[in-house]
Image (cartoon, rainbow, N blue to C red; front, side, top):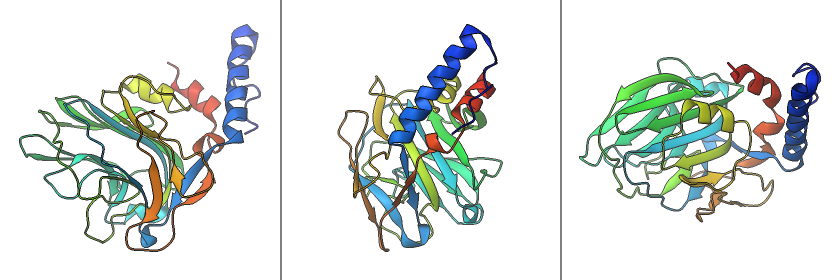
Length: 266
């Protein structure tokens, strides 16, 4: 990345931080990939059904949304619904705005739409969080929107399990994501703003509450591993189109993590 010199100033502490960041960059550049999805080809990553019970939930991912996402009807980042009665925490962009979809166990459908447009043609970290009282949306670890919601999430099975970059139902249309997705994580716990900000800048390992985690670091082939240790591998495919998502350089080789880390400090 070549942008670490002078980022931390002088002194022992600054040298230690710069050294750590340098190693992170070197390690990431050796095997850091992401997936480029073509919406018109309905490309997606197919994942087995994932059930997350209760009223604690977090979904997060790094995305580079193509400019056409500002006017596309919907582009799924993580598709976990087929209809209004089985929304298990889908995160998508609809008409240029981030959206979180939840259906509670009593059958009530909840839709949280961001007030502002998602930045396009640049890497951003997006997240949706539910804590049993509020559904929240985050941009780069900062809360942007919220909606009052109560009750456990539905555990109903969607028609096609979980989809990354695609819609989990069986109806075609403009529901597929156009752009790049990386570092997708599903949690059965509430991630705090501080956790979202700090952990978005590095790969993580298996830990309590991490249900599924796709780094997309294989760089080749038609499958991707689940880094949570819970056994939810993904298959690169398309719904009713052509081709599969393409391997491209990952987020940690495309953004200045050192500068972002400094910007996050109080």
